[in-house]
Image (cartoon, rainbow, N blue to C red; front, side, top):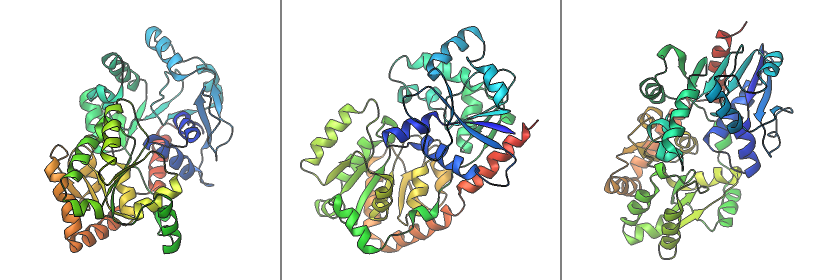
Length: 378
């Protein structure tokens, strides 16, 4: 069975040096699917982009237009995307991994949908024409013969807010490679941290700077720690700026002038693993997540995790994280203070996280994805 595997977002992220959650999912799933025993023949597929194919993939079949250029004609005409016949000749199945979901005819289409933010919170997803784009997204979802999503919470949202039939949705959690987060020798770890002028013991946030990441409240919570605690445990924010964050970035830069707060806009993936390991705790009080891959990375790194008690985050964290109301600045600050004051709690959370992360792997994600493909094998 010949499977076209979408890599557009992965290619774009790899070229910029920053893979977001969708990019990491696409990369890790592609790698995990490359099994000698699989009956499937995979080829990357991407829409026209200035970026080359991601490293580690064959030369992709590239559709000669950007996704947005194919979207509007398909919506207005109900015709398939340009190149549909070419895809039908070349493949038996298409897996749109990254929200680049084409309209096809005569070819099964699987789509991975991380969350329903474009529908439920369009102001977090689109800068302009949010309502119209939300309607388009809802329509595009119905082009898929089957949807893979990454949490029970996202599945419920797809049923409720996008009117997708439950039998057309399969939940397949994301994974993590524990060996990727294995501790480095102390001297090597200290050398990498010194490049960022860091000493172990900081609070860490990792993720693209977006309104839903709740960074204003995180910054305010850190400021409520006493001065000595803030100095011993500075707040380190790692992530590239997303849209609609200019005001926060100005606030962050202003705070960094007189508070122990640092913004590291870009950190290579290998260095990021070390930054995780040096943290007092990962703090991820997001207002909405379809999954929360950063939580697993914190667990795998052997550090405590503080996260929100909303959306898919409790589903992923289980009882291995400190869950807080993300709208309550005092609750976030109190959790940070508890991690500082209570070594027994910190040790308990570290062990619980290590136990929890063992339940998630890219190998399992790939195996469950293959089972979905097999339902459409002809």
